[in-house]
Amino acid sequence: MSSSITSFFSSFFPTVHADAPEDKEEVETKTEEAEEEEEPEDIHPTIREECQASAKCAALTKHFEHCQEKVQEGKGFKGEDCVEELCVMMHCVDECTAPKLFAKLK
Image 1 (tube, rainbow, N blue to C red):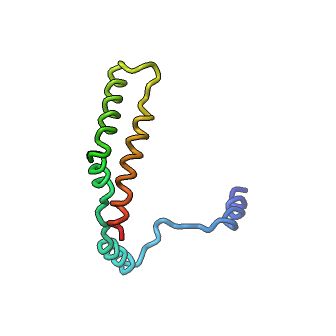
Image 2: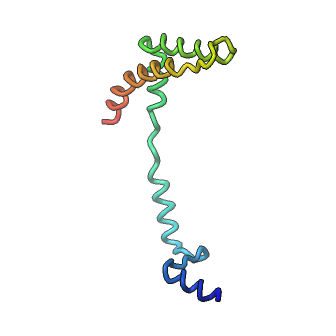
Image 3: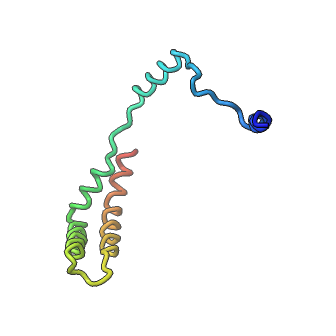
């Protein structure tokens, strides 16, 4: 009975064997390709940090950090979470970052 069920399902799904040997040439080619394709360094975090510390966004960053400290110390009002401050700061950082980032991608 179980062999008929197995044969029924195997008619719909192909059988895959994990122990099947691969060609050595194919493995070597994959290794060589992986070595050749190095990812370039991501400059986005660096640009974001520069913009966050810039004169334009520094005051908003300090305001957000102050809010976070106040909430973590339990001195904020009930339910305060500094989301509004975070959004305003991130909007400033994003506006500063976007033109610099896209200029480097050209």
